[in-house]
Amino acid sequence: MTAPRGLQTADPGASYRAVAGEIQEAIRRVLESGHYILGPEVETFEREFAAYLGVAHAITVANGTDAVELALRAAGVKPGDHVLTVANTATATVAAIELSGARAEFVDIDSRTMTMDPEALAQRLAARREPAPRAVVPVHLYGHPADLVRIGEIARQHGLAVIEDCAQAHGATIHGRHVGTWGEASAFSFYPTKNLGAIGDGGAVTTGDAGLAERLRLLRQYGWRERYVAEVPGKNSRLDELQAAILRVKLGRLEADNLRRRELAGQYLRLLIGSELTLPETAAGCQPVWHQFVVRTPTRDSLKTHLAAAGVQTSVLYPVPLHRQPAYRDDRVHLPVTEQASRELLCLPMHPGLTSGDIDTICRHISTWSARQR
Image (tube, rainbow, N blue to C red; front, side, top):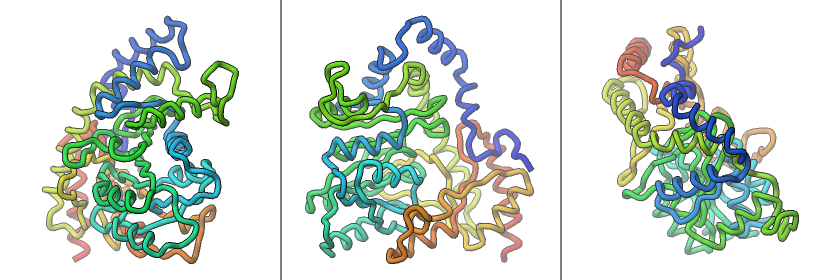
C-alpha cells in the first residue's frame, strides 16, 4: 500500500512547497545573472552557513560524500592511513574514507544514542595496533550528536584529527554549540531529504582553520589557485549556483523546521510511553534535530509489516552494518551493539510536513500492534 502524503518517512516535496515562491525567485535570479558555477550565490551561502553554525569557514562541494573525502585529505590523511568510524552509517561515510585512499576501521556504538561509543574508541586506541589511525570520523546519527567532548579528548591524546560527519544533524548542538564546529573539519550533506536539503545533490565542509579551508578550496577544483594551473591533485566537486540559491532560502527556515521536528518527536515520546518499544534517548547537554525518529524492538519486521498494511511508511537505517556488507566485509570484526541495533531499529515518519493528527494515527496503529505482543 502506498503511504498517504504525511505518512511517508520523509517528504522533501513538502519543504519545497512551503517556500515555492521564494525558491522560484531564487532560481530566476540565478538564471538571469549568467553566473552558474562558483559565483556570488555560492559565496554568499558559504558565509551565511558559516555564520549560522558559528564557524570561520564553510566550503561548498558537490555532495556529502565528497565533503568527507576532501575534509580527510585536507586534514592530512594520505593513502594507506587508517581512519576510525562506525559501521551503522550510510555507505557514503566509508566510501569517502576509501576515496581518500585510507582504510576504514570500525568501533562499536553506545546503545542509548547509537553514536560512536567513546570507551570503545579508547579501547581500540589502547590496543596500539599498527598502523596507528590518523583520524576519527564520528557520525551524528539520526540528528543526535555524537559525544564530541569525550571523543575529542581521546583524539587529542592520540594525535587523531576529528572529522565530524554532520550529514543528518544540521542545527544540532552540544552544550549550546553547533555540531560542525568541534572537529578539525566537518562534513555536511544537502541531499534533498536532509534537515537542510537542496533540490539535488550538494555538500559542504566547515572548519575554523584558515589553512585547511584554503586546501579545501584547492582540492574541490582541480588543485587550482590560478586557473588551469594545478598546485595539488584535486577533483571537480563544486556546488552549482542554483543549489546555493535554493539552500539560502531553506537556511532561513532551518530553525523553524528543526523546532517542528522537536515538537513531533515530543509527541511521539509522550504517546509511545508504555508501548512494547525502546524509545530514543537524548544525552545530557545535547539538543538533537530529529532527522529520524528511531524506535527499537526485537520484532521489528512484525511492526514494519503491521504499519505498512495501515498505510504508514517506515524505513530501516541501516539494515546491514558496513562490516557485514560485501564491499567491506571483515569477519574478524565484532560489534555486538551495532549488530543488535541493526536487527531491531525502525524509522517512523519524521519531517516538518507531518501534522499532530498524523502522529496520533501512527501511534494508534503502534498501540494496536503493541497490545497484540503482550
